[in-house]
Length: 260
Length: 266
Image (cartoon, rainbow over all chains, first blue to last red; front, top):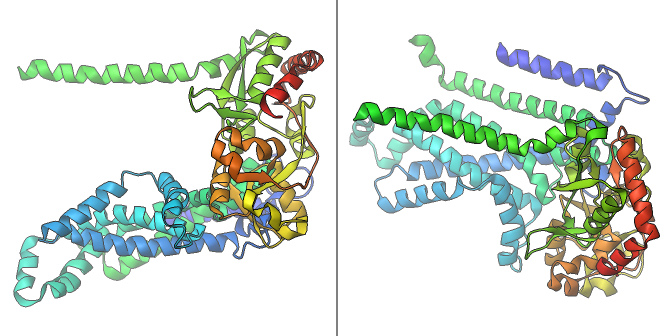
């Protein structure tokens, strides 16, 4: 219910802006249509930018989500194994990375690491954006994964170990149950990643926030531009939360409450 | 023992809160000053972005803001008979800060444009510039006319006249947009961009912050525009605008602006 209410509110706001139904109105042409085009497209700043801004946003978020989920599951599991070296490495990564702001990480990867390895590999802005976001959120997500694994009773794992190999136990007993428990927390991190993708304009990736900043900076339509931008982010994160609810329904995350 | 210890610990909470509140109060004193009626203002807050040598920069040794416009504005305030305080503001948020009343005026290499005039008032112009493209010294020979830049990546700074100029006149260029000039110079140094479109004084004098930069970068000979800098105020501040213009007139009559240009720019 609440989800639909927020979605309808956001879509109504976007619709009203598109039609120019705003208090006070505006002089001359409706500025909002141009703002929509500029934010979603963003290519008017340079026709040679090969992708529209909204697609760049999707690609940055999609690629860094995959990396951070993979890293999160790997490192989260690494921290609960018996081998001390593995545990140390996992914890080291988490403690080192989660203490650094994503903004600083972007600066470091794009402007800093270039000086070390730039002669051998080309670090494109897109690659640096995905690497920084993926590594940072991998650390956050690994803690969530670790919490999920630790929520499984040790008796259950011991019982399963009598029958299966460690890999089987992990793949069939531990991981499915852990993922079901931590689905809401993982979705939270994913939405946080979507919002932090707004930072990557810093390293010249033209995603929707940078496209909006470019438009607002030359037209001074700050209020109008950022209102549209905020609503676009809201709709995008609502899509992610719907995805979360669907997964919860499919894998029974919420069923425990209904049965109890 | 326990009963005496617990209240002591709890006492720390109101103390911390009081400290926090007084700290907030201290930070807000400019705001209180800015709420005063225009006639009783004791000082005005001037915003600038100290990432733009030689116009303004942070002196690496003292940590203070120095530069042509810092000296110029101090001279204008002295001649115009008003007090100022400086505040450092990122360029991309500087007009919004003026609009919101966080600062009273901007002196930060702000070109007078029609679009900006619709929203703000400008003082009389104090400096003429053009847009230039800086490249690495080794690349100077690779460009003999502007169309040689067509297949190159050119950096611009967000919300500057350089960015708007490229957007309107060279939309076929491949453009990278930076938050501030030092970030663009960082990418120019490593060759991620071929050139950086920036105001002429910065194009010529960026080396002032960093002697290495003076050897690395040089501007191409092309003149892309003719622009004039002005000091920006909100539209409802006629008194401040008059004082600035009066101070600027006296500074220009005394030739102080020319001395400052020689000190910082030529």
